Image (cartoon, rainbow, N blue to C red; front, top):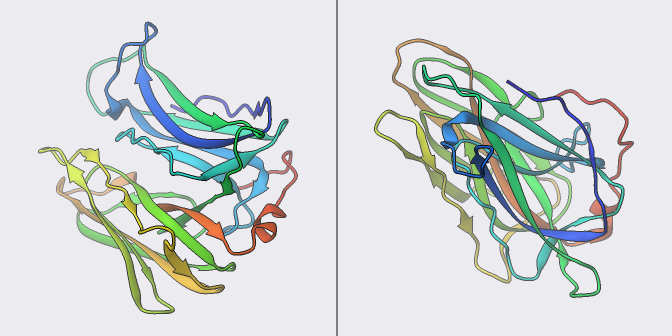
Length: 263
């Protein structure tokens, strides 16, 4: 089930510095994470610098409900009246009826004038390139990957990821330089359901350097034990905070917030 996509207008200029997703009931008590398929926050006024036909993804989470912690000295810049979409999909993998579940996303922010932060831009490396993020999962071991060219030089501060049940691993590599960047080994429950996804933070201040036009490949590894194909059951995304060498290049990537895009 997906609620309607209704834009939320940003009320004031700020830097967003941390995100905390939660599933709760109407009284604020925790609900199990497996009721959330995924949530995405998209800035309709900004272009995705890796997939320019899409709006910029600010944040996402799945059933693991991982927090995005604050990193010192950096933040995601938003301005008053920008339009943000909260795209949510709930699902119920159990036989129990559920009617009392709500998603909360707590956003920590810093106001201009209180401190000066370096702008970060979320870099989303999809195993489906720039197409639909969700795909069918065949039985058994399945590996899917795709390359995206980064048109700007800069550094990755760290990476996390998004994967679904039966996902085993996410990998990121620089195929231009033939370098391994990060491997995220997924923690699963005994039944193969997702428990948690690790985060890798690169040593500061250098981070992981990316050159302009470097090709970066994301790979998702699944092992589906059900013996049958699972339609639209898989996603594979490695996401990191990117600091460009020339901030003005990415700051200029705006879009008409009323224009349509294909999800």
